[in-house]
Image (cartoon, rainbow, N blue to C red; front, top):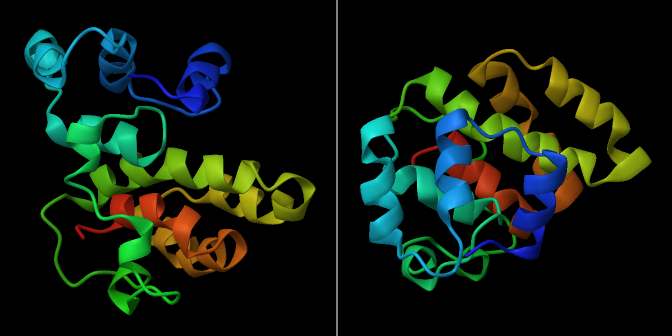
Length: 158
């Protein structure tokens, strides 16, 4: 089901969702199961990874999906370098990782208010995966490892 953040985002569109993600997001009403939504959106290409992304950025809450994601508590105070630096290999192309990570990075830096204004401008100016990944250490330092985890997961195949 939608979280409080998810309900707010649905109204103000403060997180840029792809049309496919938005279609799936709308279907979560607390009555439909994950399988129901996946079946209903299979024709437009929604898969479990898309739903996991919505859970990871805090728009949906689903114990079934959350069980498959690492919790912030499972990472030490300093996250592994593999989650901050560019990965050697990924099953997703850089364009997809950028598309997945960009809305999360915007949400994290925008939530910082004036304190994160310059960092938010830098994220908005990032036009590629490489540029966004280069900003990842600064974002992690600014928001902390717990809040940074969804972005790390979107940037890298962790």
